Amino acid sequence: MLIGPNTCQMSLSTDGGRLFLCSALGARTRRLLEVDTTSTAVRVLAEHERYDVGGTRVPPDRLSAPYLADPATGRPQVAAINGQRLEYQVLDPACATDLERLGDAHSGDLFVLSRDAADRFWTVGYLRDVEPVSHHLYDRATGEIRFLFRRTDRLPRSSWPGWSPSSSSPATAWSYTGTSPSRPGEAAWRSRRWRACTAGPGPGTTGASTR
Image (cartoon, rainbow, N blue to C red; front, top):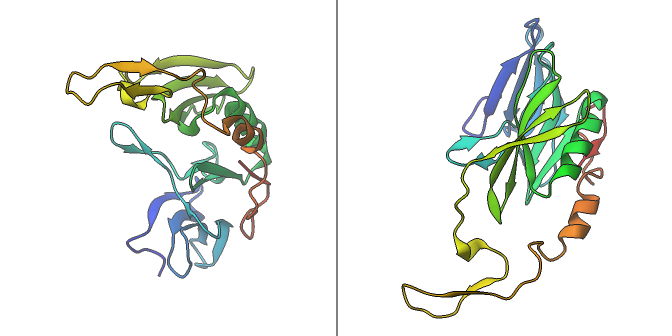
């Protein structure tokens, strides 16, 4: 029995021969599994020894997908690992370049909202603790990543890097002492972000793991 309280995101391949789901039953963390709908044989597609396969909370109240499925076949191509930051395990090498491009374009955590039927255009977003969620249109054919909009342009000053209250009164004044919006160590983190996860892909994966 694979379905329980920690099960999420179930889908079928377009031919109905495979069921894909995320489940932690029988394991320490939630894994991405493939179930043969005829024989009921189970295969692990992606897992991590410490973190769950899963999406992240996207404001205002949405959970991003724990895996990306091929629009033509329904088979998972990328699995999201919900650790301290979102990591990605690539199951289909056809998506490796896309994740590299999208990861290099922004320092926030990437999530994919949708893909068109031809799988040329993706709508994607980025989560970052110092700015509102931003949304972009990605063209796989050209590599162009075009900014669309931010959910809001309003951001409390208390979350701006370098800003601190100069008094404790309700109508407090704010002073800026920082010189850069980058977080300490962010440059080093970005340089290794899309490298292979140390855990590697789960049994049965066909591609490399990236971060």
